[in-house]
Length: 299
Image 1: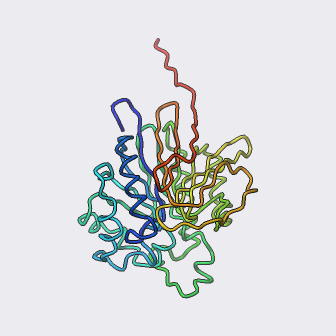
Image 2: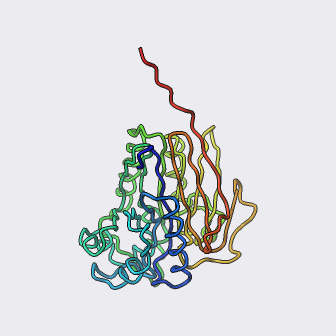
Image 3: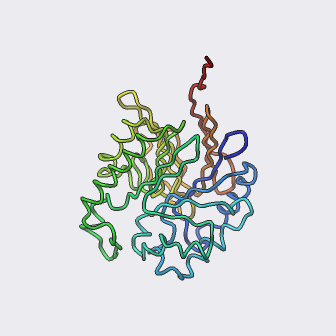
């Protein structure tokens, strides 16, 4: 957080391809925008290493897809990561290991956690275990379910922890970060089994933003239900993108970009500014959120 109480950061997802599929170009523009905004940290929405996560703590992919790519001075800040489904196809414990931080101190990844940034609390959610087909129809893929089985118990406990964390926070803003989509016009559409269980918790606790990757695009959807408004932001354009793979008539869809890019967010006590950038660093969409000024009386 800056001296004036504001906070700024970048969000990128679905990136780890050793620089290919324009990953290097996105990284370059992130560095440029990061310097301009004087960012405090970076959030990754998962699928950090393709195609099958990391094989071990000493996997060269960590150097080739992360350390050697995000080299700009402005990106030498803490990276807060969540796991995606591709990360679960490798050695999950490798990405969670403190030993990885010895290779690059920027790296921070847990299955789920809370980041208290004073004016905002971030709740990082482990979404992959919610998706039924990864268990019932894994196809040729092998998932690392250590620490997740029995699945139902893991999910129930995880949802309880998210609910408690949101109820306990008195932060001005509440942002939940996960890999999978809740609301999406993109290739994967809504992740129904996740949405059914998580969205009611977000609504009840007046969450401002849900931020995800998984769909390789940038998008912004607004949903208002029972008087509660949640903004859904997809930032999954860190490398490979899917052209023309979306539905235009999706309810609440404000913006969709079927190319690479990333998102910046700037927060104060009263305003949140969310900006979407393409692979050339051009602004392709933006929106603001507002909160009333807090007034304090002195007796």
